[in-house]
Structures are given as structure tokens and as C-alpha cells.
Amino acid sequence: MIPFLDMRAALAELRNELDEAYARVCEGANFILGPELEAFEAEFAAFCGSKHCVGVGSGLDALSLPLKARGLGPGDEVIVPSQTFIATWLAVSMIGATPVAAEVDDETFNLDPSAVRAAITPRTRAIVPVHLFGQPAPMHALAEIAARHSLFLLEDAAQAHGARLGDARCGQLGDAAAFSFYPTKNLGCLGDGGAVVTDDADLAATLRKLRNYGSTQKYVHDLVCGNTRLDELQAAFLRVKLASLDRWNERRRRVAARYDQRLRSAGSIRTPRAIEGCEHVYHLYVIRSPERDLLQAELRERGIATQIHYPIPPHLQKAYGDLGIAPGALPVAERIARESLSLPMWPHMSDDQVDRVCDAILAATDRRLP
Ligand SMILES: *Cc1c(COP(=O)(O)O)cnc(C)c1O
Image 1: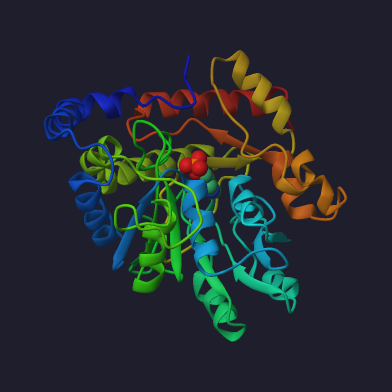
Image 2: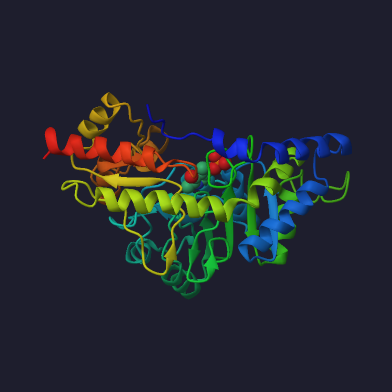
């Protein structure tokens, strides 16, 4: 049996350091907005090549708070990809603004700049590109569009910790970037967490208030808002794991290269396209098959677990029924939802495990599938 994801080897590798981090926080007995968070924020900002990092309680909040900080709300439109995890859209809805879908590119799964241009209206205030599955979105073209129309450019980097476009990391490619530290992400904590990185000092200062009852000075409150903080334990764990991120992303790339090589000969399968000049970090390794459901069932029979990211695009979810976007309106997103299949992927996956997945796919495509 090959699981979809197995985090145990990664945690075992760092177990002593994680235990030390836990002990350190307990000894300090400071659990919220303390020295571990301050240190992690400095370290993660430096890692991303950004000036500021503000830790928050989730990736969703890391997306919605910068939009709120920039004054967006009801009546404003924010351009989002037609296929993504629904949090990208929900972050826009949470502040009362309207998500406007632009189609993604069929090969890279990332926002298509020409679709973004076509989606701009006088009410457009921001663009939220997603670096889906770990590959940077076409940020140079999107930054040009954002500059021309004075739009806020917020990266959804929840799947792209450490990925690069040229020499720049995801996180320094827009006006601000949102990260999630959900446990399964490339950099994950042992619970929920998120962060915003930005070079904009004013934005960072507002975010520090927005995450903490509108306050940076005890019992002085400047804004009406909620509470969404990255706690000291999670920050301490993240400091331990950050030190391994580049090494583990490299291992993900090795797994992906082995899949690429072995699956090249599987006729009806399309392997993911890695753009030249990008450093993909393979949060997920997503293939395409016109017979996806059949292939997934065959693999399940052969003891290989797979997942679908994502089976229903946001515009066809009940939650977005009010937008009234009919099936067929965003054909690229809908085709990707029908055809994509995520293969097992984690940094410590062995060559033998990758080979067993590939053997099963090749056997399945030889036998029952076209
Ligand atoms: C995981 C994820 C989020 C949300 O992160 P949470 O920490 O779960 O709130 C947002 N966008 C994308 C693309 C994600 O993959």
C-alpha cells in the first residue's frame, strides 16, 4: 500500500529539535506574541527576501487581511484563478468583496494573463494569483497589468514556499504574499498557521493590528477586527522546519523528476509541465488523464492512493451559487477538474515507492485504458 502522503519520516528526522522547541516554549511560558514568533518572522522574511513577515492564524487569514488592510470591501472586485483551492475565493468573500474568475492556463494550471486583462472592470481593485501545486504564476506579466491599472497584487503562495521565478522567491513577486502553514504544505506547522510577507512597512504595521484586536499596545485598540495569531509553539516548530525547507523541496524535485522520466512513455497520461526559469517545488505532482476516474480506481485496486485537486471548481460549488456562473462558463477549469489526478508525493518518498506507483500506472494504461 502506498499512501498519498506520509509525514512520519520528516517528523522523525526533526523529532529531537521539535522536542527542544517545545521545551523552550514551555520554559519561557510565553505562548502568544512572544520571542519565537518574532524570530520566525525575521527568519521567514529573510528566507523569502522580503522586508517584513507577519504571522497569522491560517492561510485564509493571510489572504483576507491584506485585502482588508488595503481598504477593500463591498462593491470591489478581486480577480482570482478559475481553478484553485476555494480559500483563494473565500478570502475575497470574507471581506465583502466579489471574486471574479479569470481562466487558468491548461498546461501550467496558473492564471492566464490575457484572461486577467479581459476580466478587469472599473471596480477591479486587486489580483490574487495562486502558485498552484508549487509552480510560480506568470508574475512578470501580472505585475505589468497590476501596475497599469493600479491594482493590488497579492500572491497566494500557500503551495509555493521556497519556489523561485528567476532568482526571486515566491513571496517577493507581488505587493504582498500569503502563506499557509497547514501541516501538509511544503512548510507546515503542527497545527494551523499562516503568514503575510511584504516590503510595505505601512501594510505590515496594519496587519500587526488586524491580527490582534486592532492593537499593538496592550488595551489600546485602533481598529475593529478579530484575533488571528500565529502562536509561540507553532512559530518555534516552524523555525525548526524552515531550516530543512530547501533540502526537502530538492527531494520533492527528485521525486518529480523520477515520475517525469518513468511516465513519459505512458501514452494517454500528461505529466505536469515545469516552466523554464522557474523552480517548481511540487507541493503536488498532478498528472492529466482523459480517463481519470478509471485510472484512479485501477490504482486504488493496486494499492496506490491518489487524490483529486480539485474535483469541483469554486464557481460550481454551492457556496458560490449566488454568482450564477453556469457550468461550461469556465471550460479550462472544468476540464482540469475532470482530468487531473495527484500522485503520492512527499520529500521522503523512496525511489522504490515512486517506481511502484509508476509500474501501476503503466500497467493500468497498458491494459484497460486507451
Ligand atoms: C491551503 C491553501 C490555502 C488556505 O490555507 P489554510 O491555512 O488552510 O487556511 C489557501 N490557498 C491555497 C492555494 C491553499 O492551498
